[in-house]
Length: 395
Ligand code: ADP
Image (cartoon, rainbow, N blue to C red):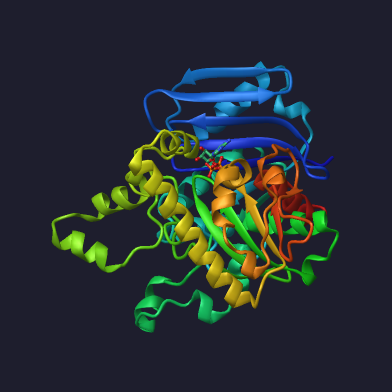
């Protein structure tokens, strides 16, 4: 019995998947949206069934009830599915959660208090955890943290140069996110190359709606671009990435309040702020038809990635592998070509036809004589959460 229910809850949505932990195979997946609004929605999908339903989902408990109903309506009630455990993705694990952790009352409470560092995410995770433990009282629940993989960063990489007393009082340091993805992608890249992960220096570029870069030395995260929050680093769909912190002071003095700044930097910046859409496909189409704002946004996006790539090549003392993953990284040959342009001096050579090919699994896009392997490796955070959950509960 290796069937794991994976739950990935956000502030107003919850994704779920039923996954076979041993091979990553998916039996069902779904998305509950607009939790807390007057009309919510659930989409439930298996190989045979696709159902969509609008209904009121006032909170995460109701979201869970909607999910249970969706399984029943699809003719596969959860009671008959042999679910062995529930794996919860948790965005912020602070400094103490460095591994997948069995959820007890105390662990759940700690996840809630860590909401100070992730106000949009951890309180929602907590609600979902409580609801899930009520719905599935007889199976273990495991928290898998997005921050855990980066807990290996050395102090000089995770410390911000501010007053240490202030940093200590408020838990201010770089935590890094997307850790589940960086871990699984770096392992898959090594497996694809047929080399032990311990022998490789990798730069992984996770480029989705959120985006982050990670320097991985021998399988261990040594630096990453997201920081205290998932706002730092690369340019993203709606998030600014790196800024001069003085910009915030400037806007505060100009009359902005905290919520307005939050909205501006998290929801109305990045590609959205520069070109009016956070969808990279739209951006590419508009740039291709001559839209100057979209062309600039593409350039700014690439520039930020190359800055981090350059930094990590120095930090790692060179790299064996550069890996592209997530929606943009897996699907945009133009973006990959722009990031890798003119890196011949460093031993990076892209094969144009390999880069243009559309493929499902891990693949090489560098030439056979490229000193650095450049790969596209699909991420699968849910399969990794299922694997880690199963590893803990079957130990
Ligand atoms: P999330 O962070 O929400 O999981 P994804 O990893 O799914 O995001 O990435 C979403 C991004 O990937 C969007 O900007 C989308 O436009 C982009 N994307 C998806 N398919 C393509 C494609 N074929 N070409 C370019 N960009 C794509």
